[in-house]
Length: 209
Image (cartoon, rainbow, N blue to C red; front, side, top):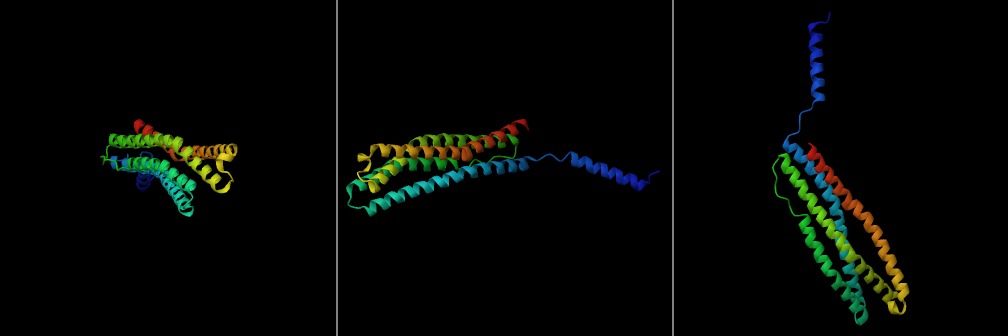
């Protein structure tokens, strides 16, 4: 026959296992903290593209400035450098404006689940809108930047420039655009499509919770 101590220990063990099988539900604040952490992770992924884009624009302007200064007096090269900068400045301004909108601080939300849902929904909408802008920017920026690279390369290093070598210039331009599009496709999948899908999953989890 089991002693009273053994019975007490057995009851305590069963109660402990019951608590483990049914953990305490998360509070609103804990849920909001978890969701906010997941959202920040996706936004951080997008921010890596933003920094890379800013660095690329800076390198392009530095290159055009260097070319302008080094070949000062050569009217053809000076005009080419100035034209390239003039074409790209509107793209840079548009990018900076959209980046400020993307990373604008969200309004403070309460701990309740509906507030968390609307916050994630807002972040998803902003990211999706920025992705659409980025795709439009690529359709303009890629041909412009590739044209600048081709014109500068042929003007400086190929005798006769693009005028005397139109087929070679066109082939080089097409090759550069193709390589850029492949890189952009990979970048979009990693920096935008994947984060958007993750945010969609978060929204589905909140709807089903």
